[in-house]
Image (cartoon, rainbow over all chains, first blue to last red; front, side, top):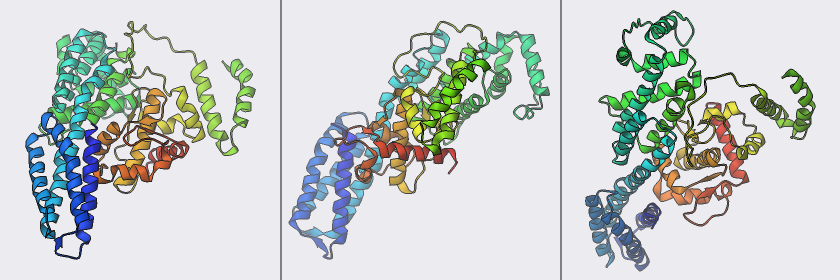
Length: 270
Length: 191
C-alpha cells in the first residue's frame, strides 16, 4: 500500500466533507449522503491505520488518537447530530493526520531510504580511515540522528584535508599560510591569522575554515567549489553546536553530495 | 589548436545556422564551449589513485551535463552558466541549489518543484522523471506540501506531464520541459 497516497486521499475527502458540512444552513448534519461519505472515508482510513500501527514509522499513540476521534465521528454519523460537533472532530482528524501522521510519515520514509542513498554516494571511496567515519555517520542518519551524521561525515572531510596539507611538509605548509596571509586578493585579504606549526598533529588545531581556505589558495578547489564546501562547513558547525537547527534528510543528502564531490573524491586532494 | 578551430569553424557555423534565429547566439556559445572542452589539452596533473568502480547513483565523475539533456538545454536557451545556478553539480549527483522554489502559493511552488526535480533526475540519468515519494519529501522540505490538494494540483497541471496512472512517477511532456526551462532561467536571474 502507498501509505502517503492513501493518507492524502483520506485527508482530501475529509476536507471536502468539511466544506460541505460548513455549507449546511441547518444546525445538525442529518443528510444520509453526507453521513455515508463519513463512513466510507472511515473505511478507507482503517487499512492505513493498520499499516501505521504495526510499523515504527510514526508514533502509534498518535495513530490511536486519530482512530479514537474517527470512532467518535462515525458514532455521530449514525444519526442526525449537531454540526458543531462534526466541525470539531473533522478539524481534529484533518490537523492530526496531516501534521502528526502524513508529514512525519514522509520524513520518516526519507530516513528509511537515506542509508542506501548515502552508501551509493560513498561507494567509490576506498580509504578505510574515511570509511570508518562515513559508516558511523550513515548509521546515525538511519536512526534519524541527522545532526550527528553531519558532524561525523565532516570528520572524514577534515581527515582528508589534514592528510593532504601535512603531506606538503610542515615547512611548506607554514610558508603557504604566510603567503596566503600576505595575499591581498578578494578571497584572502580577510585572512589575518599567523600559523606556525611544528608537527603534523598541530595542523589539527587550525580552524577548518582556514584549512579549506588554504585548499582554495593552493587551487585544490576553485571559487565555486570553495563556496559550496564553506556551506557544508557552516552546516557542520550548525549541527555541532547547540542551536535550534535540525536539518532533514534532504539537506543531509545534498551535504553528502557536496563533501564527496568536493573533497572525498576530489583527485586534487587525494 | 587554432588551426583545428579554423578547420572546424565552418562546420560549427553550419550547425548554428540550422537552429532558429533567436537561439543562434546561444547555440553558437554552447557549441564553442563544447568544442573547447573537447579540444583543450588537459593540464598535467599527478596521476590520481586507482578509481574504485562507480555504482549506479554514484556521484558525478566530473564532466557535466549528460548528452540526453543537451537538446533540452539548447531548445530552451539554457547555458551551462544558467544551469549551474540551479543545480550543483550539473551531472550525476545533481542537487537543487534553490533555497526557495519559485511560484506564488503552495500549489505553484509544488508544480515548479516537480518540474525542477524532473530536470534534476535528467541530469542524473537522462530521463525527465520524478517519483512522487521524492516530490513529497522535497515538498515537505521546501514547505510547499499541501496534502489535501497534492493530487489535485498535479492533475490541474497535467499538461506538464506525460499521461500516467494515479500514483505513478511523473515524466515531463513538451510543455513541461518548456516550463522547466523558464523556471531554471528565472532562478538564474534571481527572480
